[in-house]
Structure formats: structure tokens, C-alpha cells
Image (cartoon, rainbow, N blue to C red):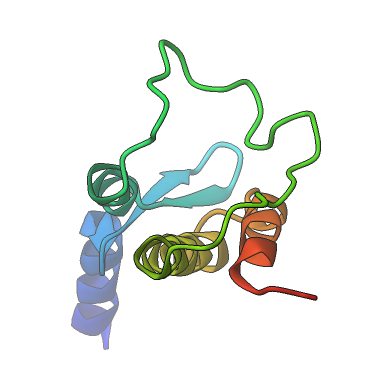
Length: 114
């Protein structure tokens, strides 16, 4: 019984990454933070930003309202956009509870509501 408890403690203390999710434990404030930096970097290389930023944007959403384009939709671009939005959905639900609002704004453009 005592050996099992010691083994569980040693496993829990050494576990910092599991299934690509990194854990950061702060015992002083009694919190556990989850992040996926490797997955997010993979997304950024697979779907690079069309605009090069010299510094990260101050907010995850633009301050003005996003409007759909009047141009006809390209199926290849729409498929790629759907893949990106789906990948962001995974991050939003798994480890980043601060981005679902931005994700929902992007997801609105997946369907034609007319």
C-alpha cells in the first residue's frame, strides 16, 4: 500500500506533458495551467498568417466587426478554412478557455446563412 502511494506521487510529480498537453503546476497559488504550445506552433506553420505581424495583436479579435466578402467562395480555400477553424476548436475546448468567442466569430463564416 505504501509503495503504491509513493509510486503514484513520483508519477504525478514527473508528468509535465501528456498527449501533447503541457501542465504547469503552481503549488503556492494552488493552480494547474494547461497549454499546447507544440500544437499551436504546428497550426501556425500549417496555416501561416497572410499578414506578417511585427508584434502580436493586442486582442484576439479585431475591434471592428468582421463582415463576409462579396466574392464567390473558392472551395479549396473554404476547405482549408474549415480545417483551421476545426483545429482552433480543439484548442479552445481542450486548453484555452479564453478563445471560444474568437473561435465562434470565425466559425460563423463556415456556413452561408442566406
